[in-house]
Image 1 (cartoon, rainbow, N blue to C red):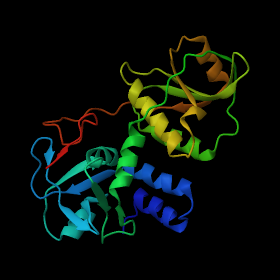
Image 2: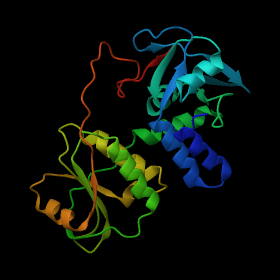
Image 3: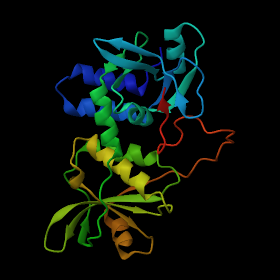
Amino acid sequence: MTETPLDTAHAAMEAAPEDDAARLRFYERLADSELFLMLTEEPQDENLSPEVFEVEDAAFVLAFDLEERLSGFAGRVVPYAALPGRVMAQMLAGQGVGLALNIEVAPSAILIQPEAMVWLSQTLSEGPAETEARPETIAAPRGLPEALITSLDAKLARMAGLARKAYLAEVTYEGGSRGHLLGVTGAVAGAEPALARAIQEALVFSGLEAGALDVVFLADSDPITAQLARHALRFDLPDAPAPEPVTHAAPGSNPEKPPILR
């Protein structure tokens, strides 16, 4: 049986129920995963009619992280919509509906309560504030948890084509205050909000406060960029993949306009 990233994260969370870091990593994997939402009929534009069932006075929709898991549960051909987990959270938040994930077909089977979907949606919608303060000194980053470095690397890798590089450094500002800064270079115009949200998610799902890291978007010609290149930890973002022909917009493809439940 195929083991998915959600299976791995769920097993780690179940093995350490008191470990907040493991719980956060599971929800990070959930947000980043493509989920297959079981429907009662084919999607109509942005309107979706999901299968809903009730357990202990709470309503849940059914979703799976593999198509074969959906078909294995249903035992027949059923309509579905493929949605990123983050879009699923946004769609369900405030509807009083939870998520039944991989029920009966995988070790990661779990009922995620409506309140947890609201929390996930709110967490994903927040972005860090950009800073305009100019650092006086720049050095290699120190004291940051490995979980943050790993999460930043994974998040930025998914931002293909939105920027060229990101530099993580320890900085000292005017007045002597110290902190860490992530300088992003080569950002495509208009991509800053998406990049900022990805960085915010890396912080939150690593268990850190947003204020633990300042974010600044820099030109390649900025003098600070040269200093960062000498001292900072560098992340190289991949090039944008070649676009695929699209005949119509699939439900959930626009994160600013989540599907509507019917």
